[in-house]
Image (cartoon, rainbow, N blue to C red; front, side, top):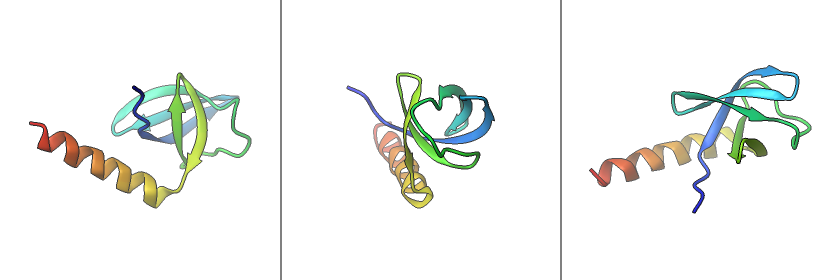
Length: 73
């Protein structure tokens, strides 16, 4: 199973981005997206940003995931 967590682009170097995943910074390829920029939220799968996501929806998804994790404790 794959869980898609919204990731915010914080830096871009050629086709490689640094993304913030709720405080954890990772690298993701932007080779599959034409118009991603710093500040955009993306869905990353297998190291590739595969789609952009609306900021409001991304923030709501992150909040929902936090609530789910809190309920599991």
